[in-house]
Amino acid sequence: ATAATLRPGDAYLQVEEVGKQFGTFVALHRVSLTVQAGEFVTFLGPSGCGKTTLLRGIAGLDPPTTGRILQEGRDITHLPPSERDFGIVFQSYALFPNLTVAANVAYGLRGPAWPKPRVRDRVAELLGIVGLADQGQKFPAQLSGGQQQRVALARALANEPGLLLLDEPLSALDAIVRQHLRQEIRSLQQRLGVTTVMVTHDQEEAMGVSDRIVVMSRGRIEQIGTPAAIYERPASPFVAGFIGHSSHFEAVVDSPSGVIVAGGMRLGAEAARPLLFGARVTCFIRPEHVRLDRADAAPPGALIARVTGLEFLGPVCRVSLEAGPLRLLAAVAPVDLVALEAVPGAEVAATLPPERLMVFVDDV
Ligand code: ATP
Image (cartoon, rainbow, N blue to C red; front, side):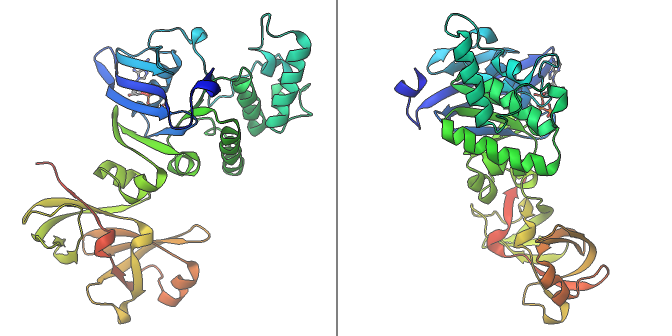
């Protein structure tokens, strides 16, 4: 029914003012969002922000206290999970240890619609899709973590659900397997066109696979947008700080044309809104936007900063800096690091381009 009646871009899942309380604790404050047919949407946020609670509400594992959830226009808020149309993958693979891989995948394929030969064909097809065609007779314990998670994925997709839910599916895997599997999940999702909602606390994972990201904090949605929009135009200080390893500092507006003072130093700033003279602001800047020059060739307006630490990440090196009371993080190519003679204790010139400063007026 799904494929025939809904086209990409149509609303597939609607979360309307969903609230959740555990006793007196409010885990979700009336959150609303829409997931379109075929979309890959990720709930991203720190531990305890409510992302798992929201996913569990969508799955019917833990219904919301208030609000409604619609799937294909149908109110499913209080339907038991068994009457809903979704497949789910959990962080802990949750496979049956005493069943073979094939039997795990076949688990949900029951009833008159699934005679044995059809189940066998479908299981073979699914194992092929997840790259485990020859592993059907093994038991879960004989597989690696990544392979077990592929089995869980095959099982979740067995019934051709309209909605795929992924609850931190990669968190238990090591870095390389994780990166590989996340690209596979994404390409599989695109190939099948299945509407997908994933929960993660890992920003790179969210950035890497999602059409849109829902950034959450303390039971509220901070921003919904494409990875590029979330990265380039964070809507709140929380998003600016949570995404992209930004440095931040407090400042005071010195002139409405965009000069701010931080720790006695004057900086240019281009804010989205005109800044009020005297206003207190919090500024964020991403490491790759901090420009470094040699201290003896400091461009006008640069801050003289001391190198306090270096962290090699391969293609870039993160340089920790102190300029007066400001603590900054800059990302530079290793080759530039050599030219800068940026060793711990050395001085460099740090330029914070005004258009790259993300400025938020503090709440009073
Ligand atoms: P994590 O990544 O740590 O799971 P999360 O963002 O998924 O974090 P949730 O699991 O949704 O967070 O939990 C949100 C808040 O609700 C947390 O403070 C948690 O302690 C609380 N909470 C979740 N489930 C229950 C429960 N069954 N009873 C009481 N409090 C709960």
